[in-house]
Image (cartoon, rainbow, N blue to C red; front, top):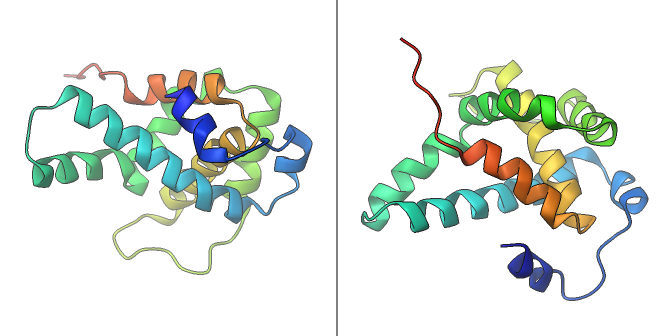
Length: 143
């Protein structure tokens, strides 16, 4: 996946400092697409189902509720720089919130997407893959 992400850049990645200077909602904008690509690729590799079922499964990963839960699973892995980006994304006031999303979860999801966008734009593909592996790992069911 890292090689594919490198090809998407069509040139040099930004330095971490350059990526940090972007508006957090712009980072989240890019991060949303990269996160979705990881999820859809993972599902395609692991599920032998039709495209409609893949779409339904993807929703279970990309909703604000699911992304907030994903952040909680990866939070302990984040370094200081990534936590800074997360907080900037989380604390940015969105212009709208989807009707089916809790505001707190939506803000948490925006923070997560900002981290994903930051890592992608700064060319930290190995780190991005490490965090996404945590997100996509099968979760234990609690009784």
